[in-house]
Image 1 (cartoon, one colour):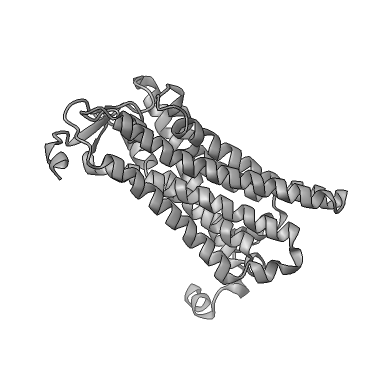
Image 2: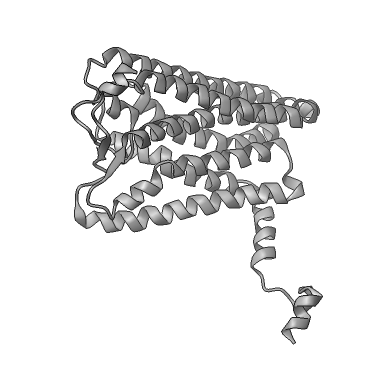
Length: 323
């Protein structure tokens, strides 16, 4: 508590993506459109999975939860970033900065664990198809989702335990569009080398362990299916292509920023945008465009809600009021 009381910094200044005034309006429109697409696209997936009985399976249950995490991940900093494009002074309170650090590690840690759960689901479906219903029961998939949130919570609490009590008494300028943990830690009024190492180790253990589990699961699936038939191999590759694409797009930037030696690079901003904004918009595109069942279900929902209703389909009370 003494360290908290010694902190005199009450707010941080965010430099954002660019200092060019000419780009601010363009960025405002561009990222506003992206954010709306992220929210609507992932909400459509959640609505489709929950409303269509043919999609009430473990795979789509996990996909719906991934879409929910993507909405959360895109919402912890993007709305403020968009508002800051129209603001001359881009500041965030100390508590708001800590909250951003908490949520980014909660959602990214949870998504890493959820991607492992989705890989396990594909392993059971392709390698143990006769036992799939028994193994991936409602209890199992609920447990997997609960574990993913628990992993994210433990990860973010451990990260905050290294940083929340750091004294901030001088520099308060963060060269990013949100409170990125590596950049905020460097502003502390002490030698933060040991803390930086602990943060890297923490993030490294989670990122590399989950990434290794994903690679191992994919290798096991391909080896198992390889000995069955070429048709089974083609089906496995088609099924896993979307998963592998998402894993590469999500883990690549995270590993570079948080597992690389604790040095910040200009490209870190671009990578941060990628896994906080572009990945949540790519996930629904990748998982839906390659999935025939999802496309059929979405088409049915959009047809049901968007097409004009016939007079015979309007409730009797409403029809009588029309006349």
